[in-house]
Length: 279
Ligand code: C2E
Ligand code: MG
Ligand code: MG
Ligand code: MG
Image (cartoon, rainbow, N blue to C red; front, side):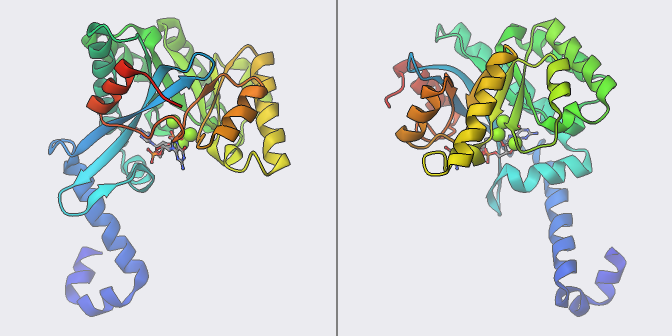
């Protein structure tokens, strides 16, 4: 394809599809070098216990600062990293950085928060558990402070392999959470069989929860189901106090969202952890 482009630049640029292909190629080769060039950064968003108004954890969220293109959001580059396989190396960097940061906060005498790290489906390979064990050992973080977030697809594809991996991770002491819950296709039977500790109610159900009775009904069902299955539940994307009240009123104790804080760079997250939240 590259040869074709050289031969006929005009034709190439006249086609939208080819422009998109080109953009992808450029982005992918930039992504390939981003790790060694240290262009990635982790931001941390607090996870809040609303009754005590305290920070109980952080979610690590990946940012890519490209020198020319500027800040690129994970929704744009994570899919590309997944397709190209780069997510394996990037994911290891995320785990290492997040665990090291959490351990540093613990060592500094700050409240002992847990750290939630997003795992892509592509990272579920036979040695995932060993690689996480190695990172925990190297950083010195106790496994019980690491929570791994994954989407429902993990429960539906390669079921026996993933089940074995997740069991190895929980045997090690790590916690598991299902991210964006309610938007995927997992069956309730699978939910029961996997060693999951937490459901995260997707932000799309929280957004209109005060005006849309259907969204409220869905959120309530997820909260009740989590309780019945002895799981924790976290509401994502809480932006308004009225949303907090509704969710808390129905028994949801943990929340995350702009109401409490946007994702923050490590130094700002540490300040917040030291000084406490105001909401
Ligand atoms: P996610 O794991 O569901 O993360 C929550 C997303 O919602 C974050 O977007 C966060 O900034 C945003 N958010 C939090 N509170 C609010 C709110 O109150 N209102 C609104 N409108 N948004 C809120 P972000 O950081 O852009 O990340 C998007 C997605 O990219 C994440 O969704 C996750 O699926 C993926 N991602 C981020 N970091 C990583 C990573 O290290 N590895 C992998 N595999 N995926 C990642
Ligand atoms: Mg997440
Ligand atoms: Mg989510
Ligand atoms: Mg997600």
